[in-house]
Every structure is written in structure tokens, then in C-alpha cells.
Length: 137
Image 1 (cartoon, rainbow, N blue to C red):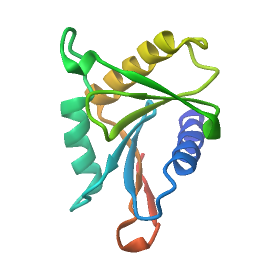
Image 2 (cartoon, helix red, strand yellow; image 1 turned 135 degrees about the horizontal axis):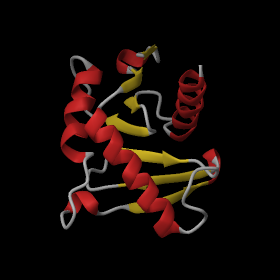
Image 3 (cartoon, rainbow, N blue to C red; image 1 turned 45 degrees about the vertical axis):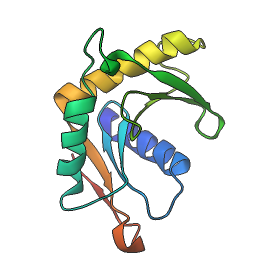
């Protein structure tokens, strides 16, 4: 039950942040979202391929880099990495406090978990402007 509530909250956050009606995206268990700028075939499979490559953190490489965006619309932060379409949400009640560096480290660790576990929890398939979503669990 707790995972379902967390998933619902994360889906709501990403729906508020990704407002383009034609933008498809895939959400992973720990809050990482892969935006699919050229969606094709099985979206979960496409996103898993991207996150499997660009999610895991490797010290001393671009995969360890991150940026932090304070998002007012979602009360929290989005942590970026070395792939512009891989984004991780960090809520205000999660560890990291209010400092960008700490939030970034926590978001990067969530991205690493998602990039190694690769558990899709939601697919937002907006191809053809249907806006239909699929929930995977």
C-alpha cells in the first residue's frame, strides 16, 4: 500500500512538472523520470535502456555530476545528471535538507538506485495526443 501511495504522489508531481501534452515519460520506483523526446516501441523498454546507461553513478565520470533545480510547482527539487532527459525528484521531507549540494547528493543516490534496479512504476504514453497512462507494478 505504501508503494502505491508514493507512486501516486510521484506521478502527480511529474504530471505537474511535465506539462507538454505530447511529452511521453517513464517513472521509476525511486522518483527518477526518463523523458522520451523520440518515443518509439515499448516506452518502458526504451526508458530502461536510457536509465540503465545514464542512471548508475560512476565516481570520477560525468555520471557522478549533478545539478539541482528548485521547483516551486512541486515543493521540492529536480536533480539532473549527465543525460538531459533523466531527472530525479527529491521531496522536501526527504534527507538532504535545504542545501543544493546535499539535495543533489541525495537525488543522485536515488538515480543510482533507479539505474541499477530499473523498476518501472508508471508509463505516461502521450503519443498520438491520447494522454493515456499505464501503471506498471
